[in-house]
Image (cartoon, rainbow, N blue to C red; front, side, top):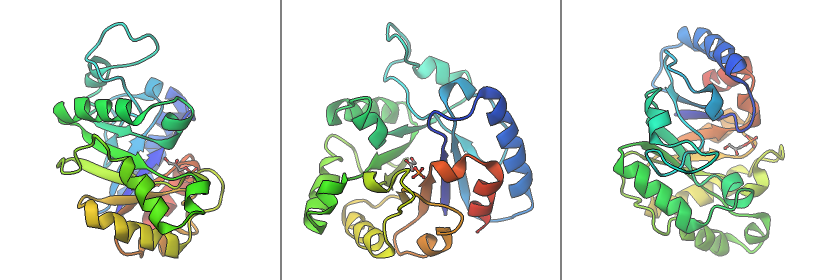
Amino acid sequence: MIFAANFKTNHTRATTKHYIEVLTQKLHAEKSDDRVYIFPPATALDRFEGAFTLGVQNAYPAVNGAYTGEIGLEQLEEFGINTILIGHSERRQILGESQESVAQKFAFFQEKGFEILYCIGEPLEIRERGDEAVMRHLLSQFEGIDVGYEKLIVAYEPIWAIGTGRSATVKEIASTHEALRQTIKKPLLYGGSVNAENIKEISKIAFVDGVLVGSASLDAERFASLVLR
Ligand code: 13P
């Protein structure tokens, strides 16, 4: 299973360092095939050692240049970062990233050989229209995306389940992942109110290869107990 922690705009450089120490200690005892990813805010990026992969939540598709407020490849290379989250619904919705700009970012970091954790997800009004509408929406979020890319991981995160404490039901996750598997032959993560309580159930669902966790990843001990389930 893949366990990815998305801190979003939480944690500082100091608390991230402490978090990684605690997590490393907790996960140390456990020998398993699980893969852990941590996506701290950009200000906390560093060269951390441990049995996890450090990734960036976002970056601009350029090596460097005049992109005020953004970081590019050069800033990531300083810390040996070669994993990126692309297409998160918060960036699409709050930061206004279009499918075109998401695809452009994807192509840039694909060309640079990054591992890409690519997020898709539908809003509630689409979910309420039924499975067909959901799939149409989700597949439209692969426009311009090379779904055959070898270092691609896909995260299905229904927007209405993010940060709401209301995870999608087992049935909803199962049917969506099964339908996605027809097109996506890469690891498929589920995200949206995953926590230490529902992880056992969610991890057993067919075609769920891992989880992308927001709120329940913020405390290192809680996240470790989720990973160790
Ligand atoms: P929550 O786990 O807080 O619902 O967030 C999910 C998410 O958006 C992870 O990227």
